[in-house]
Image 1 (cartoon, rainbow, N blue to C red):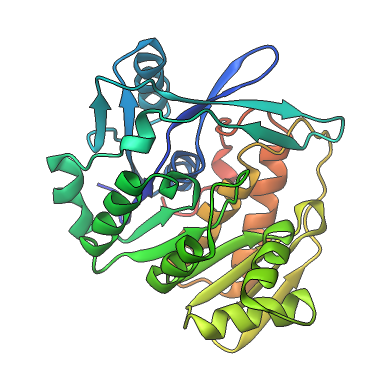
Image 2 (cartoon, helix red, strand yellow; image 1 turned 30 degrees about the vertical axis):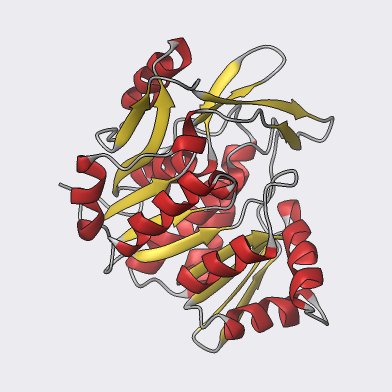
Length: 294
């Protein structure tokens, strides 16, 4: 048993690219990378009883994820998203409606594992349906000792100020990117620089740590009265950005659980995200040099 138990809570889906399908979904990407860094990682989601669901189980099991907390929905298809990657490697997404993770169900194993968790990461997309939103809130309530990590991941129009506010109220850690902070700034009337807006969110929702990622331009971390800014790590051969932000979040959270300094956390998270950008898909094999827990 690894020293730390962490969960990715929300969507499992296939990124449908022009020439392939890659398993993904931000919460399960996070869980995969947390596992690659040395934690024990579980996915909490719902898939369909279909061919994509069977392939998802095979792929995620091969990648070392515990899937006992993944339920199967007989009536709705496994999630997928059409992902287009531009000439700079940046992905954009189109999500179909009414798929399995819109009907997220907490099975007995999910409910029994929740109180044991050290951290759980959730986002906004899987809360687009009321059923899944309620299930996510119930799981967070069932995990009293876990660090609650809200990786915002705003997609299309699948968010509201109420969903974002209720998520922030449940969170200990916030992670968002430089596009998302502009959206949130308009919602919550935040003013000033990115750092000032991030600090305002951090203070308003009494967060332990707030993280802003800036793509290839690095990151900004604020917590415990300190701010750490990084210009990022160089990507030698950009392939795509899919999963890079999720790997960043995983590195931050494992570093936080290990009580590393914000400088160490920032440096490691930026290096890992740059590595993921040099690989295809969200869950590449991660070199042992990145591992944090032996």
